[in-house]
Each structure stands twice: as structure tokens, then as C-alpha cells.
Length: 181
Image (cartoon, rainbow, N blue to C red; front, side, top):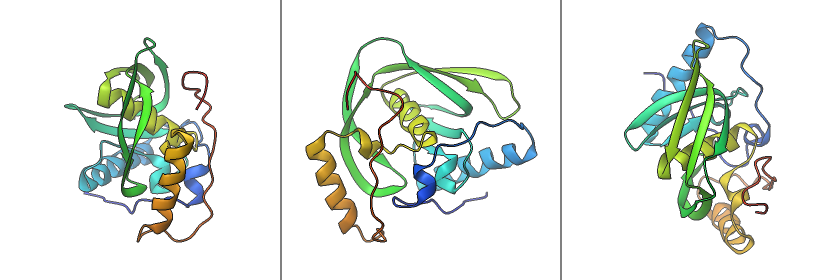
């Protein structure tokens, strides 16, 4: 088991878009193992490579009985149905807020060997796919909160024991959700 430390809110790697994976080699397979082990150790539903300080487009997931990983993911909504619900993040430990996401999505990418895969998800798995892909674009779920909730979230983050005082950055996701934040 190779559990790695998780980067926390304020770490610049969490705000940097990750690079596409071009080498499907042992190093990538080790990264997927580290992501899976760390996610399981922390009890998370998903974990993206930037959360371990690695700027590559890879994430793992384990939710609703489904588990796996996706390399170079691209997702699309299957319909216009949305869900509002509690969302958290291992990089913002112990804090949760309601966040709007698409209810049904399909993600396409590759496995760690370079073979194409497709994941169709609803509810929690759909939320996880969108959340983790946002990480790969340097976007955190607090960026998706409505203005009032985001202000509350930033106040709670600044008061958290783990917060180091870094100036928070809010980014616009390259994946628009319903035409507006």
C-alpha cells in the first residue's frame, strides 16, 4: 500500500491544469496504485493526480459500488437533468456544501494500459466524474458554488485548522454548467 500525502486547498498544484498522459508505462501504473491506495485510506469517493502533486490527467474513483480509474477523461452530460447535493473534497477536509452537478454523464478516456474505456454514471458517480475532471482542469468544487455559499465556504476554509493562510483563488471551470455558475 502506497499512501501519499494529499495536497490541501491553497497549494498551487490544485489550480494548475494537468497535462495529458502520453506514456502508458510503469510510472503511470504506480501513480494509479498510489491514487487508489490513498483514496481508500482517506475514505474518499475519488482522487485526482494533482491532489498528490502530480500534474497529469488521471483520477481514481470508488462510489456506488463502482471503482476504477480514468486517464485523459472527457465527459459529457447525457441529458439536462441536474442534482443538488452535499459535496466535499479530500483537499478541503471535513467541509461540505451543496453543489449543483449534472445527474447523468458519460466519461471517455483510457485505462492505465492505454486501452479506451467509457464510464456512464448517475447521481454520486456522475458527481464524482465531474468533480475529479474539474481537478484536472485546476478547478475546485468551491468555484461552482453560488456566490453566497462560496463566501460562507471561504470563511469556513480560512477558519479550518489545516488552512495555512494562502490567498484563495476562484477559477471559472472550462466545463460550463447550465450556462452560468
